[in-house]
Image (cartoon, rainbow, N blue to C red; front, top):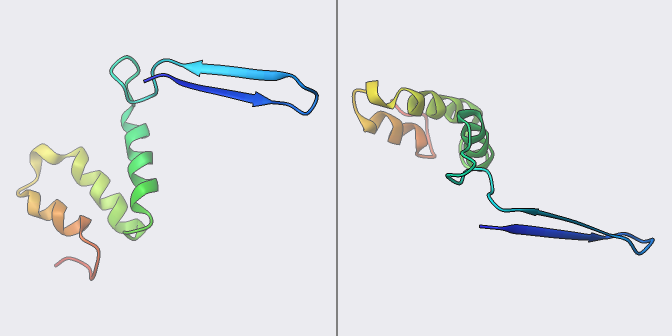
Length: 82
């Protein structure tokens, strides 16, 4: 999991940076806010904002959901779940 980037400037200089552990790997775990932001970015093209927020809320309290079907209904594109 190492990433390297080199940028060559017009004046001929090169700037380099390397990251051995991207955020989200065990050595550099992602925060809850990082995970929510990533999900929101990915889900925005499929779900409306209300469903995205509701899904994040449900995952945050997954242990207390009556049934995972509630979450699946919110994550399924289409008409509002009943």
